[in-house]
Length: 446
Image 1 (tube, rainbow, N blue to C red):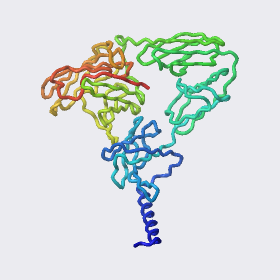
Image 2: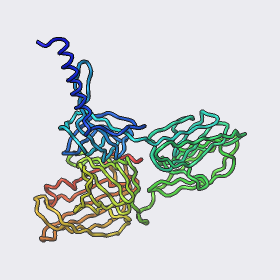
Image 3: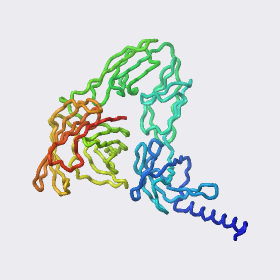
């Protein structure tokens, strides 16, 4: 039987052993400096790639590092057992993918993680006097003094407004570190107000050719005089009007933008933003989600719900260029539908694409794809009514000679994506998972 003193010695020896296990040199991380540590869970495992329940909304960025651990009880305390180091490689709003770099044990779903978040972008807006409304890129964001974290890196239009004072406007460039805006507001006599509403909303507003934000726009402390108002939005004709602002009065403007007549004009590739999302429903009842998760110099990176691989699209043509695997490896595609969109597009345009591929029966063949813009027509979907380019695709098996089939796609400049797909009801498409009859049921543009 072990005495009390011997028992205490064994306990201390056990705790020292755990200390060595917990703080193995393999898993010691560099100093956290001023970084923040976030905790979450491993939700799934794909070889050396793990998925976490932490995303960009928490401030995580590509390249951030972290550790995987589980806990055990030592006496009355819980102790972490760190078993792997990883680095974030891909991001969405709610989740992220990470590459395991070092490990001393098996990583399992449900294990805990901690991620070291590098110093985030911060923007501080102050004013004298304080208590002024702050608009960032046309959106009301609070009152001074205002401190914001995780604001997107890039150029932003800041407007500070307080009744009885001249409005203060400045364009600032945010990056890593702290950016401070100090607005010394000047008291004024009698000024006017200008309120601009647009249909549709979120149009870019210009006053005398200077961008002031997106609609709805509310300008207080506007100096009396005439102003040239211009409203623009992708897919719509620009709207312009001269408006007089009088001292002590509010001028209200409603701008109704008309859709562009695409029968007579070419359409350039859309400008997608991170967070743009489209949800589709097929005739078989399946849901498919397309979301922009990253933007490179000449590429848009899209995540689709049916695949673990990301898709990279050329900004100018919207041709599918390659896939991005979880490991970050780029894989060139030989896909019969990689050039369904080939901007600029216009009524009557024709183009071709020949690729090697496999049929539904796994037979290696050569596909010749012929595309043509048949016209522009109004399409009704659960997501709304759209004027859309009608794109016809004829696919023919040429080597060895075989059959052919057709599909149609409707692209909307307003939705910035296809809104409907229709496939020929023939044996040619039997057994394929895509394309199939599909409609857009909702979309969200940032």
